[in-house]
Image (cartoon, rainbow, N blue to C red; front, side, top):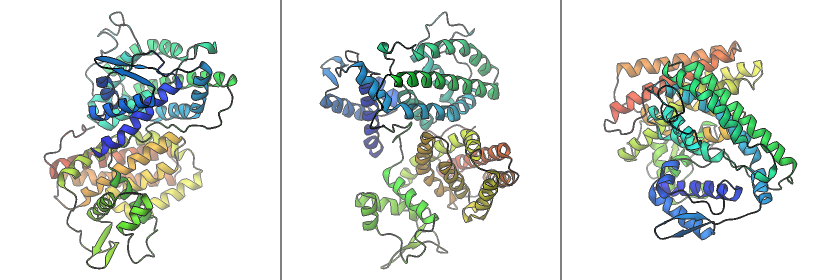
Length: 483
């Protein structure tokens, strides 16, 4: 319920932006409630609330027994102004797509038996007209084998945040026509690569596809901008903005955890109290209390009776305060995020390493090797994700990693000594070894090898965490697939 309460704002803002920028035009039939549930991966209650809000805003009109109709109307110039406000964010998103989605599609496609949602089994298109919905369905099939809700969230937001309207009065070529022609050419090639399990070749082809689509978008928006006034208020409407299924108290807990790791509380006798946390983050007592419980569970803080809460040093772990069912649900979210990083962190880390001078790579290796967090898998995750967030070349990727980091805090529960499993020990050791290799490669200024080792680090930690979660929480449902 808390997650849906946060998601309705995302859905509302996304649809409102599409209406104001002309993606959804006056007189057009509004998507059905079922379609919105599927597109945004939210419940019917959330969708109905958003529809009521849109009707109150006066941008759609509903009537009993009929589909809603878009009733917001604007001039082409107004649509252009709205679009120009989002121009930089749109192009930023296309750059982010190229660094993340090809790897996800290529890895997922190797787990698919066949892809037939757009083309026939012989690779032809004669039996089905290619349109935007069919193409989306085709690519969605490549993501389904992950069994990962967060992966589908990424694609859903990508589909809606990166879309923009074609302004007929501009006199420019429709960029979507050019993109469709390009897709017609490469889709048969992509299907062939999927059948042959040519993962690397498929990834390269998909990167070319995103580069081409992004180029078409940049040409169109740049030409359109020549005939439009410079917007005074730019909208930073970033990909995956606010699409966070982690509960609010976990976000607060992760923020406090980061601050603690940076040494902010080292000179204080006591850790911030609940009232102080409530004031700092503008949250309720219940949310602050849950954040403190989470930090206690993962071993960051320790409560001294009748005195206060302090940073934990040598004290034994306190008993778990958060319900097992809640922990289990959020471990699924943790595993979803970790699975994505196990697939994408190679490209992301290479992009980050490429921004650094050779001397800075050595400094990064020294910083990683000297961190006390390196002794635990959860700590290694924190070290690398903190680095990636600070060195992403695109704002949308910073935003995604920030939200991923909120979910990763739940992985600390796996540091508690529940059981010892031989296979888990082996996988954990592999993660430590790959992390050490990443540091060695950074010292040699071998960015490519370091990036590969980072990805292998995440992969080993993911497989370890997945197996350990299944052992400790036997009733886990919707566990993402094994890579």
